[in-house]
Image (tube, rainbow, N blue to C red; front, side):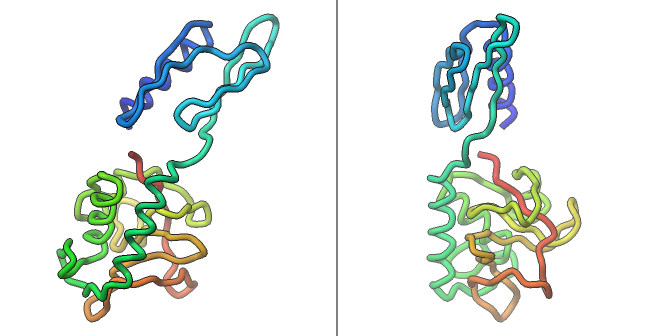
Length: 190
């Protein structure tokens, strides 16, 4: 992620100075040429718009959308696991049994090729934190204070999430409710 930010910063600086720049991430490499005044172009889910100001081009960027491919794969695998009667097993991270962070790490490894680690606090370091109300399907939901979380699940949309809740229960789909509301959400950084 830091590599992407550095490359994007260089691309942004090159655009302001009127030159060409290159953006890259682990999946794609795309060349970016500054758009002419009033034009918009999209590269790697980011929108670049150039506006004429005193005969100088000013380029702004914004995140266009989240990666729907990884999010869909994460949500689909999480839902599939919720239908397989996988028991809660403390420290588990296999189809024989999972705990909460084992579930999220397993799903992200299999569906998106991302290792989150097997501990909720470690997983916090792999996300961009956001309010629960801003969560999108595929994001993680955390319970507890930042840096001291004790539970994690995968948000699947419509106020629902997939979790490995507690001993004696299976991986399942649950609904966010006021009795057990997540503290914050996080978008997993690719």
